[in-house]
Image (cartoon, rainbow, N blue to C red; front, side, top):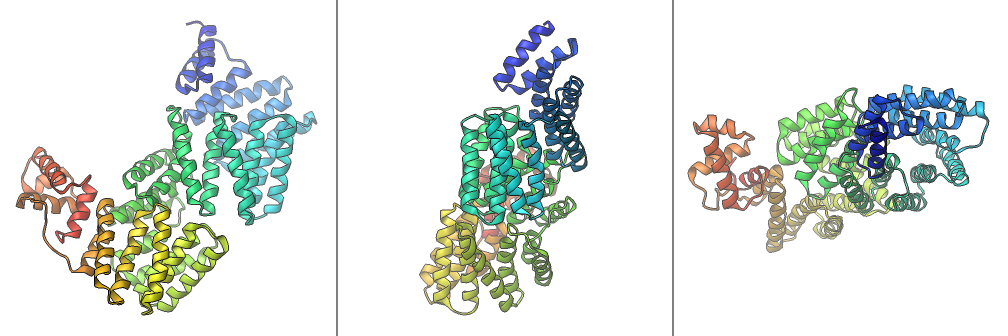
Length: 544
């Protein structure tokens, strides 16, 4: 294929969003005859979308050098911006600042009003948001919107409105902020935004939804992002931070297997050298899944790794300590974390954990204070997630204070809210408390119904520690059901202990093939979908 043929094929592939093909053909053309700036930009974009960050940076630098050499100041500044944008997403702020400064100098030399000035204002706006200076951020972002509208640049308008929306959210203006983010996403869904920017806008909007605890919007946009990625299977950048968002949402909605897959993929992508700051959030989700399934050793290792990446391991690690029976360690950890926490998105989860931990550690007054603060947050922000957490805290402390009527009213509200949010694990935890409150009120039948309903959810999810706790509460420690043979019971116990097929084969002096057949039979007899569910079943029936 000649250079012109490869170039034409690459351009067509780029328009079809076949990024791997576009990269391959454009790179082939570039090897035969150096590409002009227009096509260099296409190649740099395709490399970025394929996750070839170093290659993309080199190509943007080439494009910048070529356009600057011809005195095309605006275009050179735009190349510098996209180079800086890629560096910023990779967590390299020093190089980002250097390229942005270079771009600003080039525009000052040209002394022209252009869209590039709007682009270069946005990193400054983001810095103002991070510093808590929302008025300055709003002024910068609003100015960029006006530049984009004046210059007819839809990418700039959408980008600036997204930053403006995030600034208004941080300022506390949730209605205006979410309206701006919704408008941005409608533009993205209408395919009016370039692919290099669209995925980042998805991720930024989802982060904004999570920041104000708007789970319904976060889920809706996460589904939209997933579909958008599926139409472009070569995409790589949005399989990192965005996979973390997906994992967090899937975890809440009880899709633990999907959450685990997304979290592992995010860890794989984000921990590649030089590593990305968001890696800690991805590893934390992995740790949470291990803890919820009763894989405590793996959970502790993952919390340690998350901390190494700079992610505070609380409240997960404190909840792990509580599950291990180390109540004083759990109390010290959660109190320390609350004392240091001034971050609105993180504080509610810390407070909810504090209610459980402080009650278990014999500090009902501290638990009541945590529940009261949670209620204040819920009243101020008025979103279903915080109302669910606050009602749960109120019901739990009321039950501890021997006020079953108050406990039942609050816990019913909490269950309805969690159920409405499609959060089965949290809803099941509330049903356990409802069962205990019904028992305290003398209603044994309803108590049993609530506890049984909670147990069914825990078994389906594979929440082994919760099933074990439920078995203690109900006194049900019966042996295996489902017609398991004695050998299958032995295998099930070892599966629940976390052993692989190879480990079970070595312990029972069987072949791995025989163990695999036993595991398959166990799952079939008990009607369970996975080893995690089998582990939960073993805990529920007192086999471990």
